Image 1: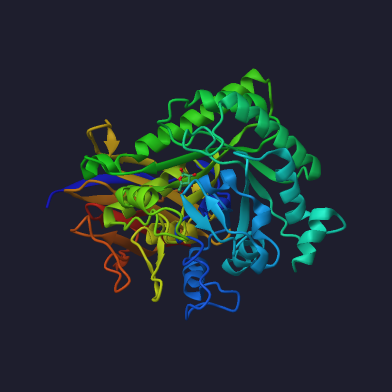
Image 2: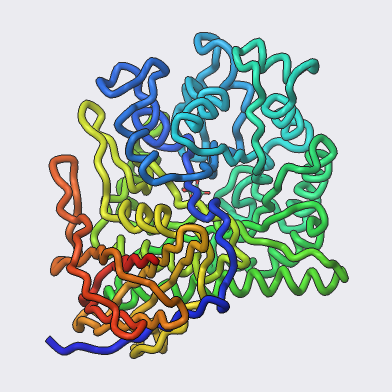
Length: 504
Ligand code: AHR
């Protein structure tokens, strides 16, 4: 088999930025089996006394997800949060028109905050700016964050939660640029509403952080004018603008599929440039940060979903958007994580969408175990080993063209250095489908570094999947050789995900 060469040079002083741990956030929406039958399933053998599945919690704890966006998604745009609080027996069943399902409201903000505590994560809460507005956002904020002595905070206390949930990060609606969104708005309409809501919420607490809705993908017709107009209204009162992006493989080959992070890079850079344009127009000193609060691969389940929503609507927790991921999907997830790390100076938060059952790394069997998809592993590795400062990866390697992209690097990589522990980790994907690569990591700028381990995922079958009965796609370890003059040489297999761990 022919071998190509790739060299990654890392320098201590060439840093992208310190990584905000919220880059490894995720997302749980009231959608399909994410909540009911996913995180919450009273009566399941693995359920705890609150009805939360312990097997799912265990898998999530291993991921060390710091923040989880909730309760939507499209769901939030017609959500009445009051339906989900108070005694469970008096909560209404509602029709969720976004997903044409019935919402039993057995889980609401109280249960979710409690579950997040068990998962070791914070809540990132979205307010409904589709069919509601300033008043309801403020009431919800008071219910969640005020200690007591007012209508909504006392209501929370009477519901059994003496301590406030102290939610720091709030999303001002969801994808309101999208025609599918309940309460879809023009950029002008949304910009004004988001600004008014943000101002009121910050009057309650100036220390909360607010995310305005950016475009729901880089291909929407209104991108990037949407960002420009929305930020024109909200620049001074929000802290982040959101990006959402899902990639699928539709009538294209794997090489083109794995090149999609070229588009992700363009999306991030264009949003950042648009923010800076508004900053200049406003003569502002503030730099707007980005929240990539929905990202993933999503395409396998499209036809099944159409059938359920059209022909069998109004079920409770139907099996919607349950993509059964392949090994090549895991490679693209790895590449998306690398792209986030390379841009973490602007992208401060990101949410893998979603976490359980719905386009998720973790799946549950209704009467059986929880299990993990191939995409679980790159996220596990980057979240666990990617804490510290993202280093600027100076990479020299071959390039190739695909159907939609030119000059795509054969290898892509990111590196993270943790000054405190002395750990340095390189994440690399060889997206060359034919050739292994001789991979050199030049660490002469880090005297005393030693290789600790080389974890990799490779498979001759790009379509290999996992299932409840077994984990066919899982990481392996390769033997590490000693450093030679501050340089580490290894082989990264064709079509592979790699984690090279070094330490002093
Ligand atoms: O994550 C699934 C859906 O994708 C979300 O509800 C929506 O925000 C996006 O379009």
